[in-house]
Every structure is written in C-alpha cells, then in structure tokens.
Length: 237
Image (tube, rainbow, N blue to C red; front, side, top):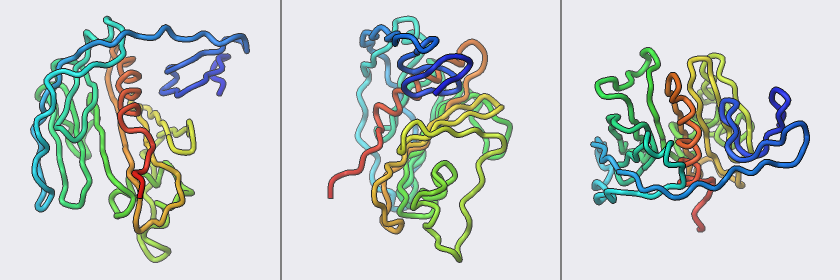
C-alpha cells in the first residue's frame, strides 16, 4: 500500500504505520521492539441482560504489554473479565453483556459517557459478537459486503446497514478491515473469512478509538492490542 510516497507493510490505521515503512521503495526500516511494561487494570462495572450468565470472575490487577515507557505512562487496561483493552489512563468505563450473546465494553473521559446518536466524543469501544444472529451479522456486514453476514436475513429480510457517512474502509487482509472517518474515529473489524453458514456464524470483533489532540496517536497501540488479543480465529469443532 502506498500513501504520500510511503509504501506501508503491515496494518495501517488513519495513515499511521503499525509495523514497517519502506521509504522510496528502499529497504525496510524495522521498528525497534518495545520492552514489556506492566500496567494497571481498571475494573469496569457491567450490566448483564436476562439469562446472560453469571459475571466473570475478577480479572488481574496488572497486565504486561509491549510498549515504550513513554506510551505506557499514558495508558491503562480496562476490563470486565470478558473484554480487555487499553485506553488513556484516568478514564471511566462500563460494559454490557446482552442476553443474545453480544458483549461490549467502552472507556471514556470521566463524566463524558458517549450517548447513542449524540455528538461523538472521546472513547474506546470494543464489541464482541457472532454472525449467527442478526445484531452480529449487521455489525460486520457493512465492512465485508460480499460475506455470508450480508445474507443472514435472506432476500426478504432487512438490508445490510450503510456505513456511517464518509467512513473510509480498507481491507488489510481478508479477515481484517480498518476504517477512518472525518470526526477522527479510527477502528478495525475482525471477521474470520471461513466457509460460513450464516445461520451458525463465527465470532467477530468491532473496535473503534476516538482520541483528540496530541494523544490521537495512542489509538495505534490501542487497536494493535485489541487485534493481538482478539485475532481472526474460529474455535475448532
């Protein structure tokens, strides 16, 4: 992939290189491996829908991650024991485990929880779902328009939702779509492209990051970590 004279190898989010940059077609410049840093884990209160199962046991108080000390000093882990991700230190968080099997966790500045349909604020959101039911299929089908998820409802059912206005999607691999939009949100959608009976489905992950100002580059390690924890994989039968 080439952007502004740079050939990018590896995942790219909002023009930021995650792995390797090739300048002018020259040799690869490898990023120096980061040492593992130990970060605090913030426990996130979570709402459970009817028949959603028992709350997950408590998560560890600390987790290690490969980051530079400078970046690690600005981040913490947020977790409800089911979903875990990085977000800026000092944020608040909450989660939801729905009765239909879908799960989500979000982190945001204190007192500034995102409101559905409201003005986009700073936040990190991770949704875990599966394509064997409508919400999971509709979550990912706009990013994979030729996949089994688009056929979940059949020709007589509702159409796949449209992408948010002016959202730009790129496919890093067959299983991973990344996106950007004008409000500054970057994200990734993980959907294993295996032979898929739409009525059975496969696990999928949607992650988005919106951080303003000089800290916007934190979205790169945040999304990298989500992908490392939730790669495109299907449990063996």
